[in-house]
Image (cartoon, rainbow, N blue to C red):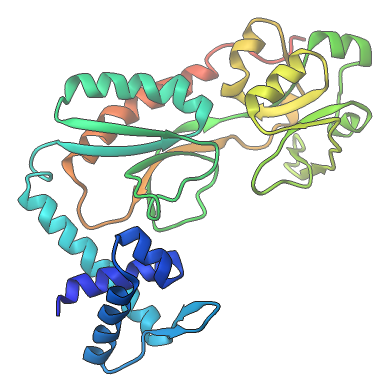
Length: 310
């Protein structure tokens, strides 16, 4: 019996949620997969999986064993990479993810320069506005904007990013400039749909620092930040975005930032990777190369006066 093979199969079953899905992922016949896991259970003398016609779940022993198996398989993978020279020479594929607009504007130029210096490294750049799972999607490094809920990730902060409210000069001339967040309730607003929608827009009272939540009812809801910015330019309504998403249009005068004194604390911008015992040299080289360049790019976003005059 190949114990490592059986462990790998069990981990895949736990990740996919069924034997049939794991069989497809591994390209292994269902009967073979079932037999390998049964052999593993016989070797350990305990049940690892509870099978039923509708679902498959891990036993308590199975949950503990899968967690240990993942660590063991990662250590084996590290050892194989080390033997292949990945920890002594920067080579191989590097998978990086970032928000779409930020990635296209700031990460892609850094990646292009990095590739020119390291011909033995290939990069797969995954641009997505959802938080791609580093573990499940086999991602090496990610740009994250906002607080990091997962303490198992290792983070290198590259800056802070303001969250701004803005509108077209035409809309403000016709409807008046809001002076306090509550004034937004009298104006049409454009919001961005997110996987975890917020009940409103959050502000911070100047002086006291008290949190102010404004229950925005959108006149228009869109699925991308670029669409929200374009709608605001066309005077559909007021919108609320990260500064880097509107800095060019604000600089060109197509949008004006309002209520800047009520902005919440800037969101941290981090390069994150999974916490593991070893970091392949390709990752270390990219982190050392990208961090100072992205730090400069983030600082340059707010380098000029982009707030409402007077």
